[in-house]
Amino acid sequence: MSSSLVATSPFHLLRRPKLPPPQVRLRGTAITCSSSSAMVGDSPSAIKFDLRTYWTTLMAEIDQKLDESIPVSYPEQIYEAMRYSVLAKGAKRAPPVMCVAACELFGGSRLAAFPTACALEMVHAASLIHDDLPCMDDDPSRRGQPANHIVYGEGMAILAGDALFPLGFSHIVSQTPSDLVPESRLLRIIAEIARAVGSTGMAAGQFVDLEGGPNAVDFVQEKKFGEMAQCSAVCGGLLGGADDDEIQRLRRYGKAVGVLYQVVDDIFKGKANPEDKDEDGKRKGKSYVSVYGVDKALEVAEDLRAQAKRELDGFEKYGDKVVPLYTFVDYAAERGFSL
Image (tube, rainbow, N blue to C red; front, side, top):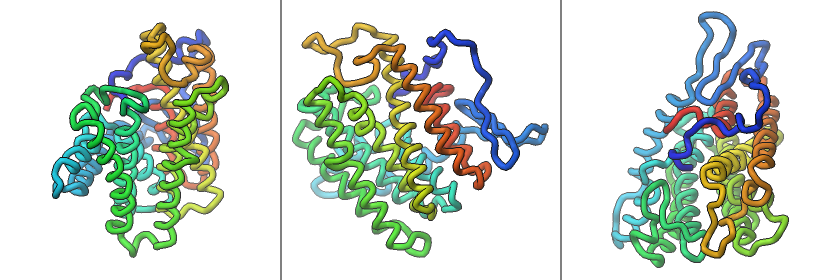
């Protein structure tokens, strides 16, 4: 999630009349959502939700807890490689922030959510380390810095990623307060993360991305980019005590937001470098832009934005606690501020 992609919203490219900000009706009160904030109510005393402040405040807390969660031990180089990617500057902490927001929606506390939130960031970092390897996406940089394998070598990068996955699971078990989250919920959370990163989740998306296929773009986008957001929202819901129907709604919401973010990234890149191709003369990776073009990708992004917000309509009874999740959708589409 590169900060360099903060720019004018790609949706103006559709050449359609500009619409007013979407409104969400909660308990009879209109909430007007935008990329960075939401207004609750119509009176002068209405509460303004500031997504940027909410997000950056959480980022600072999560950064501190991540730093504490990976102390350097023997063999030092593995831990240094792990910390290099997990604590990298420029990381937006989207998975942990979404986890915390979903947990708070159902009345859960940040103290209960932080261990799982940190674990999600560890797992996310591990997946990026492996994705960047020459045998995978072959990316020499990540967030404007040299990729892990460029700094530490391919072997150490593989080990660092391998170590981060189980560390995340261990962190959830050892650090989550047992008086706040029952063991049965923790088991479901661990199973959810394992599913998301495994052979039916992100690994499947990476495989299909490598292997090719004319109709693979939907599968690749959903698995490589939708799974992490889906998992983050679901884990937050589980921590907060959401029921099964609410978990399924969060699952659909998270997947839509995750794919939306990546589609918009691809639109920005496609407009900036329309002929950006790899050394074989083919566009690198499977995206809606590379397969169908910018116009079709814009339509997909609009549909995903609408899908995500429809899912959130089902949380009307929770009032303004759902506002952060609404503004995440608008941020994914509009990029109205930098982090």
